[in-house]
Image 1: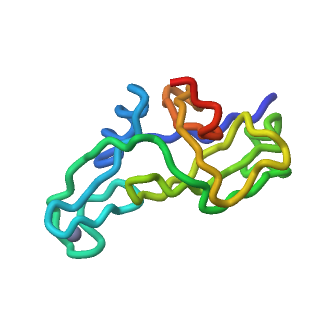
Image 2: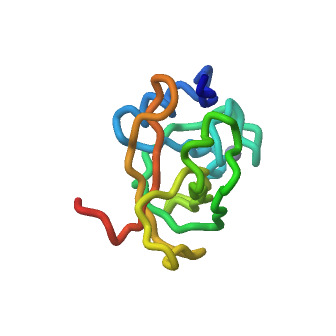
Image 3: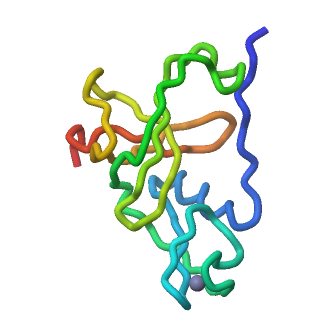
Length: 139
Ligand SMILES: [Zn+2]
């Protein structure tokens, strides 16, 4: 029997992030009081403790902060996908996100590479951003 992949169960402040991903966008929060951009959805600003966090839409563009090529699956359900590449991307809006990198040429992978998000179905009923080199953009 094939192992299943872990499935996210969005709740609370995460729900709007997953709803935006279904529509092809990455949401991020910005504090209306101090301007901070927390790196994942929260109920309170980690810089000034304000609850005045406003959802904004990212361009989906950014640069690779760091990466790893997984040759051993992080969970048994990913065994048929190795090797796969995980990237931490600094979005142009200042938010750091973790996602897969797809469709890049071997040898071209580098810190600082410009990337752009596309959205694909993930495990369960969620849609997730997957990054590709920005040079592959068609729109
Ligand atoms: Zn703040």
